[in-house]
Image (cartoon, rainbow, N blue to C red; front, side, top):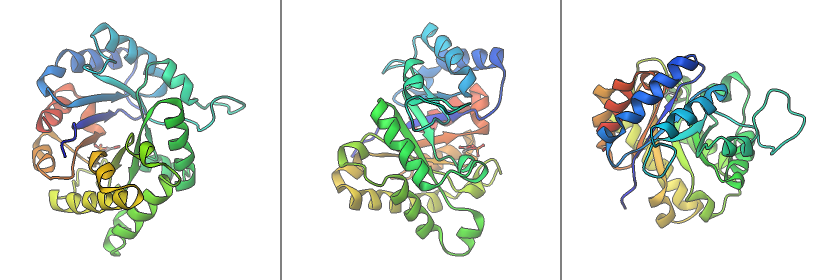
Length: 258
Ligand code: PEP
C-alpha cells in the first residue's frame, strides 16, 4: 500500500507576521526539493491569512503546492465562543488541514478525547482534514502503559467515525516525552506504536482502510534523524515543531520522506 508522505510544520505560538511571510516564501519556493511529499504549514491562527496569501503568491494551497493548516479550532460552526475559531472560518481562509488534540492542547488546555472527538467530527463535516495527535507521557512509557494509553486515545478521539471518514484523516503519533525535548523516539520505538495504531485502525474499519491512513511521527524530528524514521514501514511523514521554523531544516526533513 503506497501512501503519500505528509510533512507538516507546527509553528505553535512563534514568529511575527514578517517572519511568517518570509518562512512561507522560503518553503514554497523550494518545495520542489521534496518532490512527492505533501507539505503543510500550520501557522498561529492570526497568521493563517498571511501565510495563505504568501502561499497563493507562490502557487501553493493547491493539490500540487504547499497546503495550509491550522493548529486548533472549535467544534461548533458559529456562536458565542469568545476567542475561538470555527471550522468554516478555516475553510474560508483556504485551510486544508487542522491539527487536533496536540499534547499541548491536551495537557495545557484540558482537551479530553471526547473534545478531540467532537472537533474531529466537526473538521470532517466542514471539509477539513484533521491531523489527530496521540502519544504517551514519559511516566506512562516507563510504566509500560504506552499501548494502553495510545489505544484509549485513538479509540476515544475517533469514536463514531465511519470507515469512509476514517480514511480521510491523518494521525500523528507524538510521544509527549519527545516533543520539544531533543529526545527523539528510536525508529523501532516509533514503528512499534505506528504498527499498533494501524492495527487498531484496521479493527475500527478494515485492513484496507487502515492501509490508506497516513500516520505521522512527531517529537524532535530533525534533518539528521528523519531518514531513519522515514525508513520505517508505518511512518508516513512527520509533524514537526521546532525544526519547522527554519526552511532548511523543514525541507531537509521533508526530503528524507521523499
Ligand atoms: C510538535 O509540537 O508537534 C512537535 C513535534 O514539536 P518538536 O518537533 O519541537 O518536538
